[in-house]
Length: 326
Image (cartoon, rainbow, N blue to C red; front, side):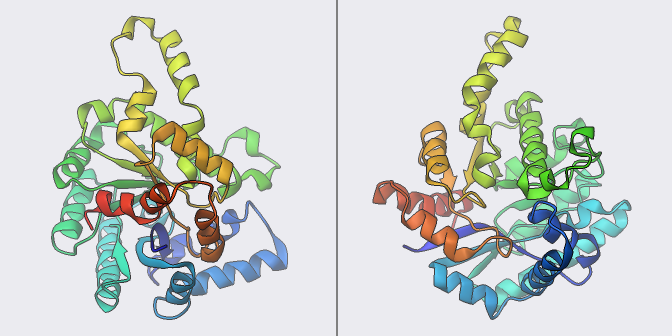
């Protein structure tokens, strides 16, 4: 079955100082030594390549289109806003040129300088209106600032105006909690990124972003960063903490309306079935997380999932086609 993949990464030479190496080791949950160095090198080679290995992996997995995005954290790790603006624009122009070379195989998510919310909003508009990008990939916080803060309201207004999704992707927390000390195996994709990104998403829910901007859609990878499995508890604790707000929407209702997820990096049939049951068949989409996950493993996972062919078609490509206006 043909597939669309939404969390597929690349890097530019200018941005490699922020991303290559750090992400690759953390993606293995803190692995070290010679093995980690070899895998990091392989990731580095795959991230900058668009004509051979990437297309071959897509073809083998039946992926007709990959939506490409800068690997984490990108310019969001830059302290100087002017530098971030320049680098983000250059990265987006670079991606547009690669898409132009393979227009039927690649699409793009914008890379944004969120150190300056207005500049980020303007760059998003440019990427959508002029470059044809399908939304944006945001790599978590920007120097400790999260997207529920009031300074980002103009950015969310632009997102709603453009009617494109925002993919909220993991990165390291802005400060390292004590609980991870002496346990590097818990860092990165193994666990800490899920905690960080799930919490960021809940800040949007409880911070009222989706009440203020009701037509915004946020995408979460990794089978929803655990949120689909916790909807009942979120509602229960929310009622207990704020009984005077009984008229407010329960968190589960907001999540089901404004958040959709991808299967990225969680090739588990029980997890998929739970997510489909919790969120509905229109809210789950296939993805790989190339090059950090294996495209063939991800394809085999979704092809053999115990779901109907109509649901499989939605997860593999139909939901992405609708959301991205393909």
